[in-house]
Image (cartoon, rainbow, N blue to C red; front, top):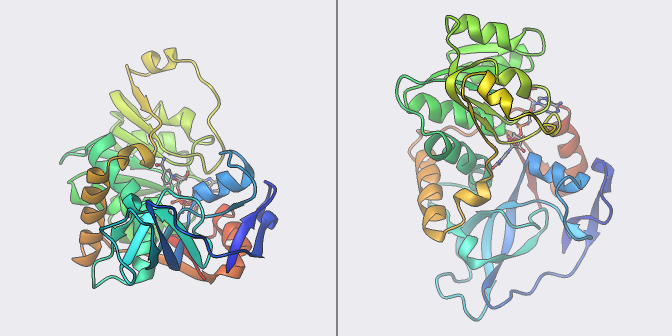
Length: 322
Ligand code: NDP
């Protein structure tokens, strides 16, 4: 089968199209014929070696497709089932062996592209807004990279929960997309100072929560735009990792809370995975949550997909189609 393999860590060029055997399922696994694979920033971290994985590995950790074979201990799935998953390496491929307890059924009305686009970024937006800092009506939230994959979904969920949403974006075009998704105010943080703008928009009070997947370039100012006892939810580092910092800064800026969550810990239990994925897929099914597919690239164009994502050229979801 065709797969995108990483044999040494580095830039997009290390994503190589390889011919490798179709995997056999272990007793608790199912093999899925991948119809669409999601491209996510975490794939960049693995490719670069920021998150270590034994080499060589097949890149990607989000997919949707059809079950072809099941291991001897798998009873709740059968060949032909339409399934989706996230959190297991190896989705940039024609087939992947996936622990059966990570697979969820795709609702009939959703196609494979929608399902692949929903799992990682959709469940991330969901846990950030419903569990890490449960948004309530009346909260004011700041969402960085509001036109990104997670960003556009988080904006919609925050609005549905009754928040006032301030978003940041790198260009006017992206700002428009975030506004169309429901954001109330947009700051072009490549041209405007988001600290001054956010304080101006909140009458100097600051926001209840900052959702930050950008990291290195935004973190310091995040501390200054929060209200006393506000929450800084640092969930990624698209601009680079945040260096170690002095905890006393949290006191100085108003007894703040900082957390660095991962989706992994918010879907670890099967029950929680089912609840969260049902919620997200259900919202898409009902039209309450709109997905924006930036582009579906052929599998062979994985390098281009990564260059576009890292080059800030995307807005919404990128997919690879085997
Ligand atoms: P996005 O589609 O949001 O792409 C990243 C965006 O970050 C860019 O489009 C860009 O938007 C912004 N950005 C700002 N500075 C830079 C920079 N120097 N280089 C590249 N991008 C930059 O990606 P995802 O939705 O896949 O992921 C968003 C973030 O969420 C990532 O940090 C990712 O790791 C994290 N994440 C974390 C999870 C968790 O559970 N902790 C799960 C899923 C994602 P703009 O041009 O508008 O600034």
